[in-house]
Length: 316
Image (cartoon, rainbow, N blue to C red; front, side, top):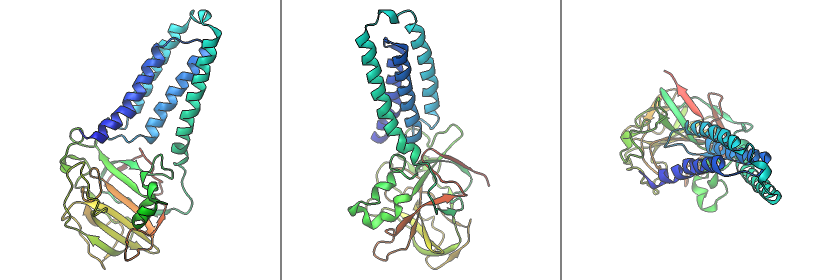
């Protein structure tokens, strides 16, 4: 199991579980205080659901946490009956103050995760770039809380790959919501999305294509070749970048014309990628010295603006 997955489990599952247990078992000084601290825990679970990266356990885990919280709140209110009169005034005010601070802090965290889901104006619409399957968005949206790519937007050292700032990353999941055979396996082929057909999301000209770079062993990355095996499509006044393809899978060459929906490659794990996924972004322009440094553009897929933890099902 990778260190990253362990960190996610600790933050997204461990912390909410501790809060749920504490809220259910700690004495309360007032019903208002219990209500407010229960609301704070609920906000923590909602934040995990919207902003968390659910590689393992799967995306439906926050729903389980929410159910456990409801049970805990029921227990807490049951324990509080008949015991509040013995609580001193300073305890009531202290609990209320702490609960209000908790609600405020969590609301501040949650706000950008919610705000980042709004559809931006003038977004380019693309066709679905993946073949049949069910996919989970791990990065996407208009704020850094749910889209890690935005960190490159105004970062000087990231100027050469600024075009990816509005990108979307997609992984595959099975019927149970699992994205791999095991917890963080090192073999890229153990991931649900590996080898999935990548299709042209628009009709246009192949401006650049790279193949032959090896798949990386999870979670190793190739920082010298950020996009790995990839294809850049010129579609009118914008360029679409599809990255991290499997070696030997790229089916097109520069100068060729492709039509929307045409197979152009397969998902792999080449380049700067922690695990197999499809990276897609849209940019205006393709500077010769830094091909993915164009002006980033917002985009939708089949009319839908994809944000973190959205689920997309594609049927052939």
